[in-house]
Every structure is written in structure tokens, then in C-alpha cells.
Image (tube, rainbow, N blue to C red; front, side, top):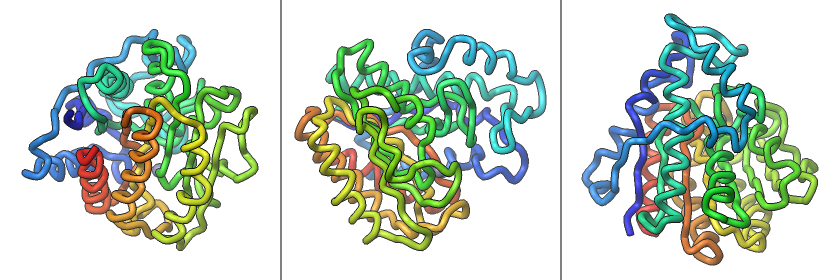
Amino acid sequence: MATLLISHPASLEHRTPAGHPERPDRLRAVARALAADRFNALVRAEASAAEFETIALCHPMDYIEALRDATPKERIVHLDADTAMSPGSFEAALRGAGGAVDAVDAVIGGKAANAFIAVRPPGHHAETARPMGFCLFNNAAIAARYAQKRHGAGRVAIVDFDVHHGNGSQEIFWSDPTVMYCSTHQMPLYPGTGAVGERGEHDNIVNAPLRAGDGGPEFRAAFETRILPRLTSFLPELVVISAGFDAHMRDPLANLNLLETDFDWATRKIMEVADASARGRVVSVLEGGYDLEGLANSAAAHVAALMQG
Ligand SMILES: [Zn+2]
């Protein structure tokens, strides 16, 4: 079975202020990298727009409607210091969440081995009822809940190697023993959460913070000693990846020193866990990554690894 690549042109219509790192060129860079011949075996699809009822698996309906109503007719409005909406942002956010659930349908439905969803805005900072850190809807969280509610998946794991801690995913699943959230991230760094002692009500949150200056060896050690053992014993029936590539050494927003080879390694390790308990089912959603070259090359390494599944 093939790897599914889901995207949508609406992702480019989410505009941010001049000089903002989370910009449409990010997706153009990823698309260009994934247009290379070695990715010819990918099955490519456009994301559908998520129904409000689907997004409401994680976010209250009045939050969804408030974002819809906040969508400007022209120009850009700020929701907080980092997070903005343009006229195309709400549609982009619907396609992001829709792409994530399309991927769950395809992977659990046996139509694809695994999937990568290349969309923006990203999602892992979005809390239950708060947009934050460039994020509107928490696409990874919606994918996890959707797999449970619509496909009967029991335990779902989210693995987040974005350089920032996914405070939104942690908050959404804090009290939910059926979802394990695992994260490597630089600390201290935005958003400030993600300490080892933040473990969730059911010990279902696994935070493995790294220090500024850490690179591949420290990242791999955190995975080997803290994340993978917990993930493996959780026996997930689906693994969702919050795939941010801003821990790359070229990234301007943080100070970790990962290389493309580290993302390839982490992807293969996560796939081994999925092979053991989840019949290989992996759904990966794009989060951050703000150096265009580092992002494009890292996403390519990640998708190439998925294609080996
Ligand atoms: Zn990030």
C-alpha cells in the first residue's frame, strides 16, 4: 500500500503579516521537494473541508463559530500577538482539519499504508477553546479523536517532535487515558509548558524536554530512553505524528541542531511502534518549520521514510 500525501491550495490563502515566519512559502517549499521523482509513488489527494461536527470532537461549537465570525473580509486581523487570520484563513483551517480526518479514513480504512498532511496553519498550540501560536484548530488532536469516535480506535498516541511543546494537545488530552501525548521540544522556549513533571491525570503525557544547543544525539537519546518505551507499552492502535521541523539546525525560531537524518530516524522508530501494535497505521500532520530549506529537506526525509512502510 502506498503513502498518501494530502494538501489543498486553500493552505496558501491563509495569509500572515509581512515578515511572519508562518508563511505560504513554507508549503510551496514542501510541495517543491515532494515533486521530485523519488516521490512518484505517493498517492496525492486534496483535503476535504472538515464538518463543524468533526472539529467539535476537540473544540466547542461556539469556538468554531467565533473563529468563522472573526474571519476578516479583507486584510489581516490578529487573534493574539502571534496568531492572525486573513480572509482565506478559516477555509485553510477547515481543510487542515479535513485533511487530517481524510487521512484517518484512508489509513484505518486500509486504502493507504500511512499519510502525510501538508497544510497550514499548524495546530498543536490550539487548545480546546483558544487559538494560539499560529494555530487555529488542533489537527492532530482532531485526527486522534476522530479515529476513536468514528472508527472505534481504542488507544491513540500522538508523537510531537516539533521544537515547541504542543500545549494544546497536552491540554486537550490531559484527563484522557485513551490518548498518550509524547513530545520532544526545546525548553525553555515558547509556549513555556512541557516540563517532565507534566504527566496528565493518568500518566498519559510524556514530556522529554531538550536544551538549547542539543542535537541529534540528545534527541535520539530522549526518544530511546523516554518516549519509545512508553509509546511501545501503550500499544497504540493508531499513531498520529505532529511533524514540526523547526528543531532543524537551520531554523530561526529555536536552537536545536537536528539534521534531516534525525527526522528520518525518528520517523522510522515511530513506524516500528506502529508496526508492533497499530498494523503500521501512521497519520502525520505538518506543524512548524520556518527555514525553507531545512523544512523542505526534513519533510522530504520524513515522507521518504513513511514510504518505506
Ligand atoms: Zn514549532
